[in-house]
Amino acid sequence: MKQKPPLKTELHHWWPRTLADHWAAADGMVSVTRPNGTVHRAPPGAFGAITNAHHMRMGGPWDSTFEPIFNEPDKEMAAFVQWLATLEAAFAVPERSMVERISPQPLPDQRAAQIARVTASLLARSPSIRASIKRTTEYYRRGFGLTDPTADKTLIAANQRGLYDAYRKRMMHGRWAILFSDEREFIAGDGFLHNFPASQDGLNSGLKLVLPILPTATIVYMSPMQYPTEPRLVTLRLSADEVEQLNEITQVYASDFLFYRDEKPEIADAFRHGEHRKFQYHRHNWLDPLLDDLSQYNRWGKGGAAGISSRRPYSESLEGNRRLNRFIGRDN
Image (cartoon, rainbow, N blue to C red; front, side):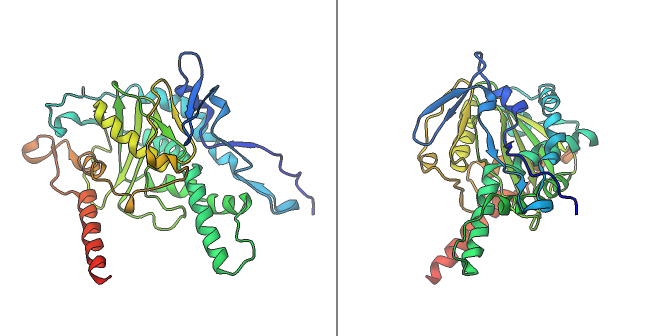
């Protein structure tokens, strides 16, 4: 059997350089805050990489890599960012109702496939997904009684390999929203709020994802059990207070890195722990009602006018979890 050449040591980027460039300040540098409060400034390519993250080193001809599957979304990242700049969003006027603030946008099939590819790629190779795979794998290895339950990079990569395609296919159904900000910058981290499992199973309804992709834009994906089929994409311009709410959520899900352009965030207690944390059931009292409004917006509501459905899938699920917790509490 002819053996393949051994895999070379490579840096695999979970934060693509084509995207990192857009986080650079006027001097071409990106600022990164760590849990201890220290700040590092460096060129965009200096952050967001893991050595051999997508290699599976089995030995000899069985060595393989799945890094090439990310070539397509990485190559179209710049064009995708340019497209985001073409989307319109109403000004964030506090006196306006939410239905007046949300703007429906066209989303042709080709563009829908692109936003699914880009978002799925950023989710599938994110450090938070890798950390989830590592925790789960080591849990079962300990259960099997292995002397060393540590999951190495090859084992993590083997479990990570099929996630991109699974996420991408699931994201072809659901509703998208782009949140814009003029008053405050969004921050990004090595983790962000989502409830996608770190496996190809369980990709059912109730999924949600909030991904800060630019200092001025955040991608939201929602797949509640019920929502209007049109529009497939909406936009919303946030106020400074609303951006602050999202930034606080990002700090909970980040572990080691917070990226920003010009506005240094105040470090929250959740980020100081230096681990990927999460809200219980990934529920949030402020965010879930916002996701309800975004997912239930209907440009042809009652009487033919734009409206927001009375169904509140994310908020009702939040309340259901509260009732479950109270029920469990009575038995303890």
